[in-house]
Each structure stands twice: as structure tokens, then as C-alpha cells.
Image (cartoon, rainbow, N blue to C red; front, top):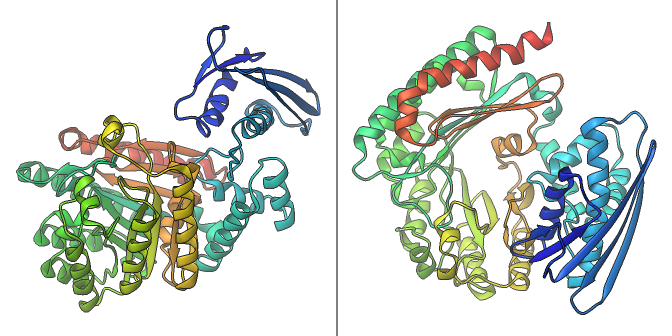
Length: 501
């Protein structure tokens, strides 16, 4: 959809206008010279020292016109990026209002297009706003629906029950361990993941680098007396490597990391059922790791084939029962709304099959067309449900989880997510993933080690975030793991010590 934009010369406003447009149209192209654009939008921005007002008009091809206006007070002390953000939000409010009227589509998340809406809720809570004030802000300034505001409130309350000291954990860290191998690559995936077949040389070299990182990062944390809150093995599929390799990896963890017995949670993704064996479960038990993921995504066999998952539905169920029989008492399962060829009927079937297993937690994802995925590159091959069907499936997921005793405890959103919805983690009481909360709310540093692992360094005082990523491909990682380890330790030194002196 081409949209001719008048009255906006500042390029800093182009991105928010594009993001709002993308909520309504599959591809939005902003034009700044009059042409054959089906829509024309004109804006007038008037700033004072203590306020901003934005007036807009939207004209369609058939000559219909839609208008909106918003005035917002801005504290005079706000400057730079903080002030600009207020102006952007006001412009987005006006633009969204006009597009909602033009399309008839109401955006339940309002002008929020970011990944972590609950982080904003926490920020306002930490600033001292009451629940009523936060509710009013989201409704009046961000145009969120009552449903989404209530969902965020419920999640934030649950998080504070699970981690009462959430606001004070900035002096600890969590660790993400990235293992970039899978049996096959799923069509929707953009994670660093490589088919493990015929890659034993790469795997062995990679594990050597990973052991080095664990040893050096663990040594630094031990010397500095910094605690680890959680450890999360992701990827890829961490159970793609052999039982013997897993054993050596966890042995390295308990040898190198400080005070492992007091780490609050250790999770290993075993998402692909075809990687789970009795021998690997024995290894997990040996190290008292009982939180794992076994991800069906769908209980429709044709869907699994279409998206490149080579396990069977029966294998998912069998491996779940095997894990349960061997003492795994905190199992997560991922489901995806909107997979190719699936509608409400198919998703309801997946929910009914999930009810037979009752894992401790379920993460309900909404399919996102990620730019680098095979699915996005070949969109014509994959038929997905309509916006209305996607919304109905999400409504059914909300009802099903509530009826079965699950409560939402974290959420995140993605670009190009179907129906402009969200991904929500639900858990039975006491089974929430602490790591998932920490990574989403960004309340502490997450040290990423391994191939493709991204670190987020959160300043304990200012909460400013610095990002640092290891290379995504095994060869580059194998060539440079020492350098990347040293760089992370330099950042940690500055973060935890130079800023506090």
C-alpha cells in the first residue's frame, strides 16, 4: 500500500508512520511526492515548550476524508529523545485513529508496536504510577483495548508473585547457552540453527569453544562474587548433541559456574521430540535439570510435514510420557496459531490433544513471517488463516488455558505477526519460567554464550542496555570464541564495577 505523506519533513518520523501503516496493510510504502498513491495523509505538528498538538487528515481514492487531532502535555524538563518520543507517540495516535476509521480494523494494541509491552508497564510501575494511572495512560495515550491492558496487568502481577525481588536483581545475571544445531530447519525459523547431520567436526569444534566460554565467564563471575539467577540452554535444539556431549557440557557448568546449587532455574530446550532419548534424560536427571521443552507446535501431521518438522505426532506424545516417567516434572510445550493450512478446527484439535498431556506450561505463539525464514521467502506456498480466524484461535487459546488452570505469565510481540497479536506463555501455579520473565522484562544482564548467542548487558544503576552478539555460524564462532569471550568480560567489568565507583 502506497501512502502519500504531506507535512512530515523530519525523517525521524518515517519509521513510526511505517510501523503504524504495517498494522493495517501487508506492505506499506511511504511516498513524499504526489503520485498514484491510493491514500494521502497530511499532518500538522505544532510544538510548544510544554505541549505538542498534531492534526491529521486522510483522503482515500474515492474522495472520502478522515480527520483526527491529539494534543498532549509534555513536561518542560523533557529534552532530546524523551521529548521526541512524546511527539512520535502523538503523531502515531492521530495516524492510527484515521486508519482505524478508514479500514474498520481496530488495533487492540493501539500504537504499541514494540516487542515488550509489559516492560513499559513495569517501567511506569517502578516510576510510582498506580494501577489506575497506568490503565488510563495505556487507554488514553496509547489506544490499547481493555482486554490487552488487563492481560498486561495480570502478567505483571503474576511475575511479581513468581519473582518478588524482580526490581532488585540487576546485580545478578542470567546465562543463555546457544547450541546452533537441529535435526532439520523449520520453515518459519530464523534462529541460528543448522542441520546436525554430517557436521560432527563442526559440532566438536563448537563445543570446544563453548566449554572455553563457560570456563572463563564462570571464573570471572566467581572471582567477582556475582550470582547467577537462571541458566537457559537454547538454540537450535540443545538435545541435538549426544548424551556424552551433554554430560560433559553440564559437568563444565557445575565446575565453572559459581554456586550452581542455588541457581533458581536451569532449563534445557528439548523442543524437537526426535532428539529425546532415555540416555539424554538420564543425563538431565544426573544434574537435577527437570525443566525442559517438548514442542509439538501442532498435532496435525500434515502441518508438521509442511513446516519441515520430521517427527510424528505420536513421537511427541511418546517422548512426553517418557520424560514424565523419568521424573521430568516441569515440561513446557509450544503451540503455534496460524500454521499453514490450519484454521480454527485444526487449532481446537491441537488444544484438545494438549489437554490429554497437561504440561506444566504452554507457550502459545502466533505465526510471524520473519524476513529471513524459508516461509517468508516462499509465501506463495503457504496458505494461512485470515485475520478473523487468527483472532478466534487466540480467543480459544485464552479460554482453554483459563479453563485448565493456566495463567499468563509473560508475553512478547513480533514484527509481521499474524493478526497483530502476541505470543503468551501460560503456566500452572508455581511452574512459571523465571528465565522467560527475565529475558522479556530486561531487568538484569543476560550473558549469551555459544554460537549465535546475544548478550544484553543491563546497567545496574541506569538500566541502560548494551547488546553484544556472538557470530551465528559455527565456523566464525570457532575462529573467534576467545575474542568474543574477552570482549564480554571487558563489558562486564565496566558494567558492574566502573559505573558504581
